[in-house]
Image 1 (cartoon, helix red, strand yellow):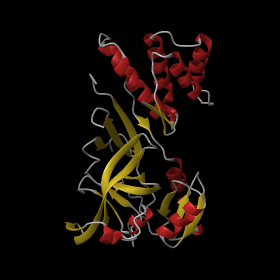
Image 2 (cartoon, each protein chain N blue to C red):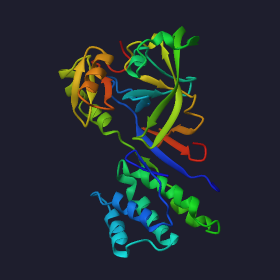
Image 3 (cartoon, rainbow over the protein chains, first blue to last red):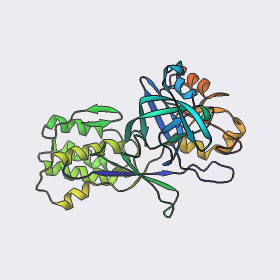
Image 4 (cartoon, chains in turn yellow, cyan):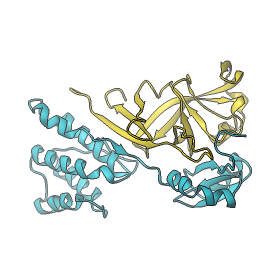
Length: 147
Length: 170
């Protein structure tokens, strides 16, 4: 392409906390083979990759999570173990953006009611900004020539 | 390649049959003046030139901003169009194709947030599967609820937990 074609999206923050704390949570759809579902994800530029609890492996058709490679890491909660699934389709904004990225199933996130949308495969193709001076918006732009 | 409701389609913008396909996309009732565009397609039978198609595309882009699901197809269409467009076109024309910011709303997530106080009473600390702005099943674990929703034939349910203390609080 001879020029960059950009489209943008605004998302509302989640505001279901009792204390009205706003979290940048958006619904994201996951697809792996024939398995699909949508789940709330916290946008977190400080996270290296996108992460979910280990129970999500089964949700994506991995009956035995131990077949996935195990890794060890360190996060805010301290040391943790996780399993890696490559090639998960991440669908954002009602199918407008589809990205293939790895998902980490993190032991410490068992039962957590949201996942984490991290950098790998996401932040390198999406421009993501929080524009709180304009309102509770998350601004996303995808350069089509990158995608 | 264009996509409409997830269905990929190859469109040749120089081929009237391709343009008729686009016209059929917009035969669905839409709450904006895509009807005008549809009328144009029907009236003219086909778009004779790229310039005419470009005008139609700009009109759709201007009006599609408030409509969920349609925008992706329009964007993809506009992108393909811009690829096909002559390199001699001036920058002003090209900028006209670019999008204004659009608020994207997931209707199930929005419904969940709006009805959170009711759901808290009905399904305290339970997982729920939401499809088309209603709870289709609920239970104590994420995987049970997802499995139940799939058994009911829902391909992509939105699964979440109705916490009574707020998200992230145990």
